[in-house]
Figure 1 (cartoon, rainbow, N blue to C red):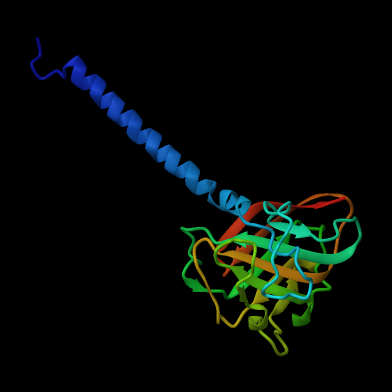
Figure 2 (tube, rainbow, N blue to C red):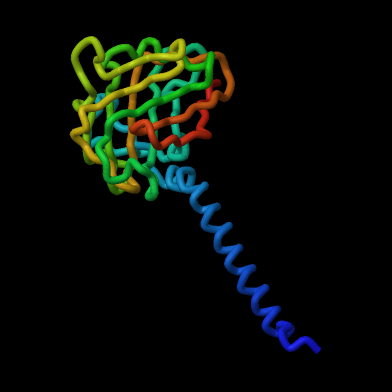
Length: 212
């Protein structure tokens, strides 16, 4: 008998340990991939209060809490207001840094944001630090001003909107960021892909806008 052989008991123990380690690694990866979606589902809709952009407006309807971007009027061809409901993930590069930019990119040939061509069209940029549905910090006034930039940039044939900020407000892990902008033209009925990028680094893709 080869004395260097591993006993059956030790062999089984090693297999169990390796299996547990692999299971832990896969579970951690799954949690990371689900981070944005699970956090977004916990966020109240921040924009069902007064439409004047009051920082103290409290949401009463949670029916839109899981939507990354939604149309206030979801009718086909309507000119309406769209709302971003974005949560800063715990492990994102944005957490702990200033809010510098938000980019909303709609599917090519779908939603048209050409009408959002000036600072006044961005009616609310709010931060809800405890995600209770109330905007504690109104950062609307931090949108960059003055020509030629004006802090509001439309590109990709009207399908992408970029909003730039002066950097006066910080975002922390778990913060809910609400951005509301008007003069958006809805496409024909259907479901259209959309992604939101904050500070050019953190992309919350996989969202969609439902037009009826």
